[in-house]
Image (cartoon, rainbow, N blue to C red; front, side):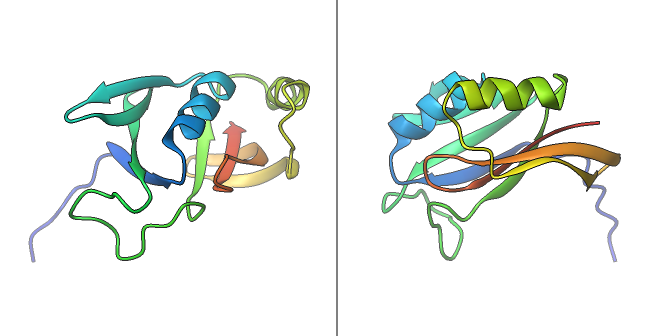
Length: 128
């Protein structure tokens, strides 16, 4: 059996009901950069990663079996203190669902808060 050494995640895809609202949320609220590429395609860039955006009903092939807005649950790591992140989000009118709470991250304990994006995807923002 061949050995496959997965090193990292390059990108993920989020299916959106409204790409413009999604771009606004992730750029203005979370500080990501929008990137237009290919034939009018959009991605959100941060660090060495990106999130490709697909419009619901107009997904690119190949695609997930059931691409659905609101089906993503993702954790982003921030270098900012989580209490400052919470204060910033609340002052921006973003509802904090849970947190700060201690959770288990890929590298150990993390402090996390949870919010929803415009499609109700679950967004966890954490730091070590």
